[in-house]
Image (cartoon, rainbow, N blue to C red; front, top):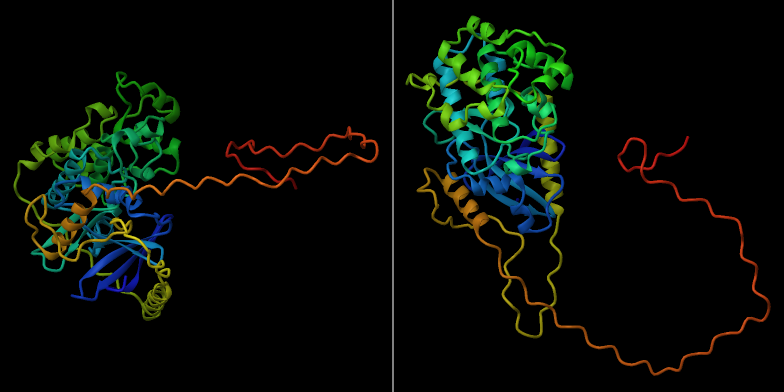
Length: 433
């Protein structure tokens, strides 16, 4: 990380800390994601969801670029391009309803991003306004909008039922069904409805409240849906009527917009609009598009700014003290050629497999993704077999004969060891009071 200087912490989660950093060579701002649990090798790094998604998705125009992975002092940093705001900030700072041309601008880019992700046989699993970055980029001709945070992404067959953020989770996930690419489209429908309403569509507090609110906004499900009876039993609303469509109309949504949202927010996941099909809806037939107004940059107070600088400097000092292990002693014989397990982006970007890059950052990202796609190096030669043990030459000592009668064996049983399975089913030992 010597070529980056930390500016301030942007956020912190259960698995990583995200820093705003500056590239020393050209002053370009980047977002450095510091993983709290770092993989031990380059091959393990390539299996991280974000790195795997970066290598698989071909059309990356509407995805945040992963520029490189840097391993420093035993810690792994994923370096992304930096975009200032998010769709959540745009909604929170809006003082009036969004125009339909602005909703179309955002919806088109979101659908194009999901179409590219799904074409790579991946599910994002956490589509929400906070994970859709909106802002002006250095060197760009105008505002941009890109999907980020692929930390939960994976192939459809590996998606569990407990994924994503509750307010944007599809109803079948609350009912125990495993997810597929359709869960991203439900979350996209909730996100676009929030963009029109300027408030979350389904701000439920738990599973039951979520299903209660879903029934109230979308009405009772069709009986042909296999999970309809289960949803009615949990929500307790067998005769609910839809309220979302009238609320959207009152906020200025056209019939074409409501038709698009209705196709995304279908109870039956098999009937939901797919991203590529949604782009052919009548809502996108109108060509008028207007970028969403960017929120004003969030300014920090002098004391908060000073704390942010001190925190960033403390991280730089800690990383500066991290030293590499001493080199191994020089071998006496010929050394086989082995690829390094820890790798980063090549200093000279290779040609992109997708096409010519439009900027230096895109060229850097292309080089990183091409590196991820390369097959792993040939394994190192097997170590020589162990030398046979020499035969034992010492004579075996005779067994000692006991001098007296053996002590009687105790009939008192030792206490049984504590059970490792507890009543809560988590495999932990419950300590007594």
